[in-house]
Image 1 (spheres, protein in one colour):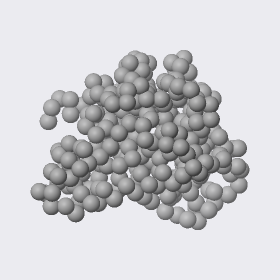
Image 2 (cartoon, helix red, strand yellow):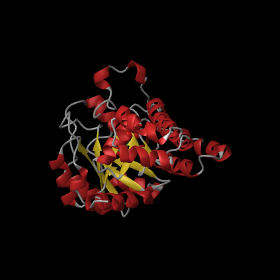
Image 3 (cartoon, helix red, strand yellow):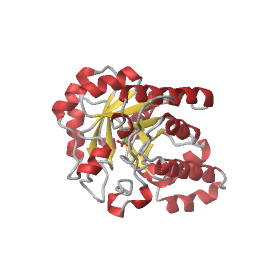
Length: 295
Ligand SMILES: O=C(CO)[C@H](O)[C@H](O)COP(=O)(O)O
């Protein structure tokens, strides 16, 4: 194993500590404190939550370093921050700020439509989005230490998160059923390195943690994603675009823990106030879909 890969294994090991947790998008120190108090295992600093990026348009970039430092100062849980796909200078700046993880995210406007960041060049672990197994393994080959299924961020609609989770898990099960000599052609079909394909076929899981993201808005949504085999969830717009962010955030954290206890989920889902307004994803134009960014 190369020194580079060894570093990747260490970063992937660190991300395992987030397993079973909820990572919440925040734009201010005040929101970060609410997230921490509600039980988030980490927060994600960004300039606007995805629902606002959708509404307001324009180029979505890395958050202001001033804001990120305020958020880091405000909480003791890990702080993640987003950079644009392929924007390795934004990533260098985030690493220099001392964030705990970087999300190379399709939610921001891509800086490079062909190349993702070579994440092996960084000490800080990266999380990246994926819609299917091939995409997840390409990001891991580039050095991602954590994957999140993309879903369709900012819609409050869990349908794409479900599609992407079922796709990744289904493709893993398919690999497990293959003969070893079939894995070479399958690696070609997936567009992913053979060694990673072989590892997934043997272990029956990704070599990094895989969280669900994009459109999770209720405790029931979060529990559904856990049933589908995800290791935890990211929630952005669903919390701070609802009428009662603290109570909803707390309920979503609990729902991830008690995802297999319907009576508990019924209790957690009561009286949370208005959920964020949702969007019918099937009505979105192709260029309004964030999940198709990256490849
Ligand atoms: O990439 C992300 C993880 O932080 C997104 O911000 C996340 O998918 C949030 O989406 P939504 O606003 O639909 O919850």
